[in-house]
Amino acid sequence: MSTNVLVCVKRVPDSTSEVVLTDDGQSVDGRYAGFTMSAHEECAVELAAQVTADGGEATVLTLGDADAVEQLRTSLAVGCTAATHLLADPQRFGPADVAREIAGVVRDHEAAGRPHDLILLGNDAADSGDFQVGIRLAYELGRPVVNGVTHVSVADGIVTARGAGPEGHETYRVPLPAVVTVLEGGVEPRYPSVQGRMKAKKVQIEQRTPATDPVGPNRVRLLLPPPAPSDVQILGKGADAAPAVVDVLERLGVLSR
Image (cartoon, rainbow, N blue to C red; front, top):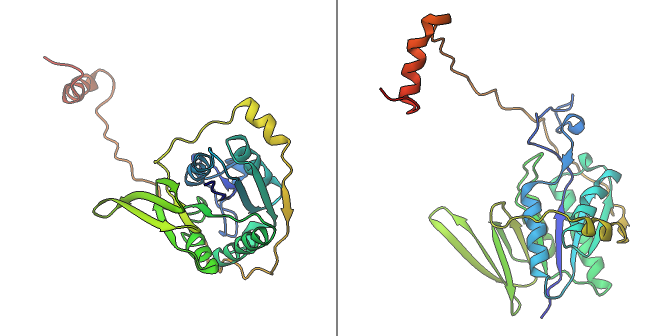
């Protein structure tokens, strides 16, 4: 039995570079860092490709501006077979707004004969860390939800989701249709090949606009954590520092007397 999967991704600033906030403190300024999708979502895309490897459709969806098509094409290049773009300014949408819009797409696709048995999302957004969309989406659709898992498999209409819990590894088995949020670390996302990228360019992306006006994130502002303190010890100057340097190297096991 084939499984149809919807995997949701978001265009976010690359957090491996220096993080700079916008002047209003409402979002991360990606002009200095470049854009990508979060590591959680990369793993969700990989799991979607694995679940549908033997049949079924893996659809990738994003709510974002015109540039977010880059993340859709990347997902198509590594195993997704269809894409939906909710064209909108993501900064105007809070977690409840995003969940409502995704639910609307799911219902419309189901009415058109394209049901999504399993919906995968990253555990949280890499830029705002809301941790809400997956749970809100499950409530919108009346589906069971499992959060923060690293492994997903489907058999006989049951999704098995595994992840780390407070007392060790936990396994959940829930009936389809279901919603699952994914943490990085369980699978290794594949790198898009040249052939995959060429194939992705030919896929016709479904474009939609939001069905309702967003309420907004109601965010006060984002704050950067204080810089990590550094402890610098001056060992000496010139030749006078040599004995202290030797002592340090001995403690590190680099030298022995």
